[in-house]
Amino acid sequence: MFQTLVWDDSPLHGDPSNTAHWTVPLPVRLEAWLGLTECESGFGPLLFLQSSLLLSSLRARVTVADGGGRPAAVEIPLVSPAQRVTPPRQMVRASRPHPELKLLVRDDAGEALTDQAVLGACLNGWREIDAVFPADADIALQVGRRANGHSASMLVARGELTFARGCSLRLEFAFADRAPASAMDVPIAPAGRSLTLPERSARVSWTGDPSLSVSLVDDSGVPLGEERFLGRGLVS
Image (cartoon, rainbow, N blue to C red; front, side, top):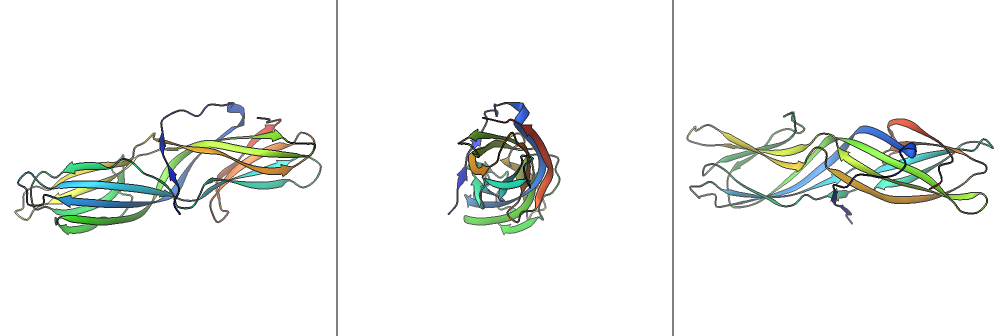
């Protein structure tokens, strides 16, 4: 079962002292459906793009050190496997009839993030697009604790994921009569677009006033970026 995240343009608020930041490359998978109609039209065909980005799994690994023994680590899920973000459906029109279609994913600077795929001649119907590429993401994560009895507490984490560089699907149109080729970029995830990572929690036991540090890990437990020290007394 897929879970869906929605775009969120509101900023993340909270105490900056317990917020950690990273910029990391996250593998994402593009699933898109390209609908073609009016391929015989003298005005050029209409193209409908419905796309989804599937995010890779992401967890926060929080280490608790209370000075009374070995540090304890607990992982809090931030992004579930196959969690997706879905931009609105988009429509564009090619400049001339009967184009040959090519496409690739590229970033805002024009750097290709995937190989170019050749779809061939424009035929009315739907084409499925599937591609995997890295997306640079800025991640802000707030971590705190809520006291719950003498030695047990809940660790809570919430945050925000922002695309550091945008990506778009570049559609290229070539014509059999050797007319100049044309192209257009259809945005998939604009730079600066943010996604809310909703609050999640995990129970952990400690004594005294422990220090907390946090790192990001993928679904295999491989760290992404460096560990961040948050400090002590982070009671939310």
